[in-house]
Length: 488
Image (cartoon, rainbow, N blue to C red; front, side, top):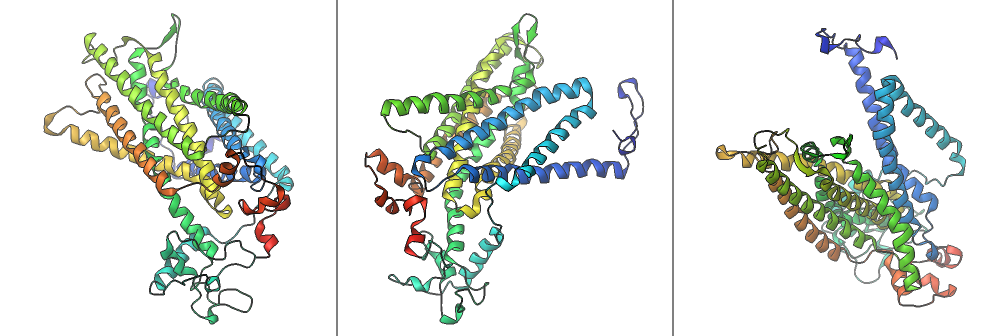
């Protein structure tokens, strides 16, 4: 909109020489990218945790599926917005120009921010505390300092420093070496007010348990990286679609770049079927509320990701054989007599896999990590996606370098009919199967989730009376924590 903010218009197709942008113009463009990155980094993880805080009721047993439903429909809404961006916004940009194309999202973001601040007084807000990463570093440093200090034996809870009013009076026995960070070595370590005399020399039980909880979920988190690697194969699927018959009718064909939309379609369809049909029907058959555990859903997501790569390998095997039979061995632009709709199943499986894994992972991390780590919990899935994208590039470059040694043709080349994309898909299939076994091992080592206690009692058909609730999940009457009743 501002002519001075960009180079003058030129038409390269007519041979016109284009003027390069100045330093200030280029800096303006990069600054906008920086703002987008900062905004996305603040909105994506925090909005999920913030929304969950509004609907979650941890002390209400009848509300056990509210988090699962919230994460599911949040993900569905995000998928629909992506679909709108790739269709409506792109259409506006193509037909109305970039000014309107960028203006529409800018107006939508302004309205979104405005509505957020107008409704701000009605939100449940968590008070900000010290940086968790600072606490993690402090625990590690203090633990190293106290490495020669013996752990207290017996029930000497007074030997551990805990916050007044906290439900955690002593650390758990898991990762016990970290417990040394909260040991009170002498009375001088604590002030009369119950605070640490030197914050850098003594941590609280809560700080130690926060670090423990993060360490414990890392193996399960790492199992999602391989699925992100599988999702990052869009370029190959684009080449496959271009070389196949994409016609739906004689006069209409699906653009090759539109096939990833089937991933989003699979996402929305699965969420609707699961939340509106499968769960209600299963609950009606059992005669009581039914839900699938988060770790089971995570495992099913990895299984679907494995099946997606298996289907992709089989389809590419037959596509390549068909291309060679048609004489397209040296013609990568040749279109084989094979419907591109055969690519749809692998995209739908990828959509279901991503939906199952991401939603269940968000719910798992949010439920397992302390309340103070909510934003970190829901950002772990996004972090896994980023790591998976980097790992996908590393695997791709490694495979390309190894397979072209000795003068052999690389598995990865521009000529899709000379390459061995089917072998690359088989490699990803094998890696996905190994990753699935790795997840099962990590799931077994992790043990039961924090929210399984009440579900197990309910499944056994035991009716919990109101006076019995304090023994389940530290919940007392009217949803109050047991620690408050006991005056801990």
